[in-house]
Image 1 (cartoon, rainbow over the protein chains, first blue to last red):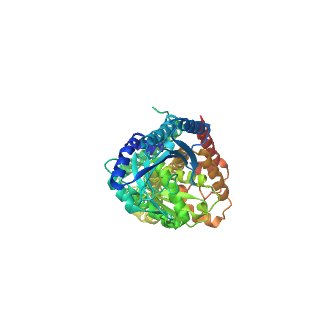
Image 2: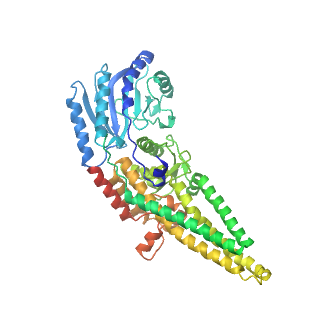
Image 3: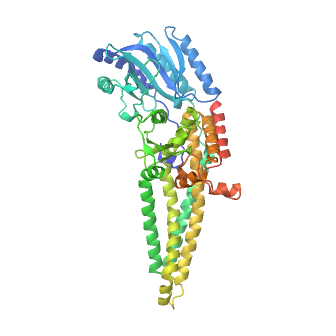
Length: 190
Length: 321
């Protein structure tokens, strides 16, 4: 936000960065090679629904677009306890590219409709024999990723998270500010 | 290029610019008149008064700005909390985590103040030292999650707009004028007698102090009104930015209604204790007993509920298009 905007108190809503999302397939290969973590085939886009008809219409269009699209995937809608909407796409675990394409379809529809600022994050999940669930979270506004590994009882496995950061640091732009690595307990697919 | 739904409110921007411009004009006029008076009379004692007022004013302004977070925290008796400090702290952190990610701003520290009032405020000199305080009354209230989120989004907008810095700088001239009046008054009371003995043939001794007194009073009064006006515009701007951040202007509107309704029902004892923090509150706790509604509006730090609700319903309409 510029100096003048601060002085005049007119903050502009932050626009999302959609392009970085396409570096996920490369990172998926690295994760499997380096840490034996495989995609679960589940990914979701999380956004804050705006009130009014305009947003409802766009949300409906997105759901229709996804359910009739590629034919291989399915889509589900859920609302979390903070009031955010999660659109969850499910694909075959080995079809990671298709999953990312679907996720991109969701966020680009929202942005074309003028609701880009409502996008919070996108989440794709991975699993291995030792790590039950790894979520890679993409922050739309920062254009950065961070790992999220839930343990039982609202605890995070920080050791694995930092290990993942090291593993995919070359493929993904990792969020440098650790205070922005917020927990997404109970997100779909985790 | 994706279309944007977020048209800035040009009217509000224009009125805010005009208010700040007028404050600047008052400041320049104040300094000019002082320099003219002191230059014409060449009086050391008056010059000393002005000098002390400026120095003390600067020290007060900078001090209260620099320690704004600590002062506000201790005045409100608030404790900074981490997500592990119980379910309320976890809920507060969860909401603010998401809002700051949506707005792409650094997360401020969060604190909880033990108070039955339903309120929240944000303070701190920059983004790093910012702290957002919610009262236990607010967290325990009948506000649902959406309404609580709307209140916190409003406070985060104050942080993003650097309202503490803007209002400190804006109040600076008022502080100096106020101090000057006080010093001039005291010097007339205690120093006036001795001085008039020494300056019997120089008739301008007492009038100079009087002129400085009058200039100070006028400046203080005008800047006071302008600062209150600016404060109301900043509140409207924070309402607007907060409502656009969550995309839920109606949730903020219903939170405002609930909170302002409860404010009038709280006993006066608690309200008086809250007066120093009034300007930073979501809803002012302390209402002066003005005679007419128009006079009340003129002196108020916050816009009227009707004015705030009107703006929010305009935003809601805008979002539905």
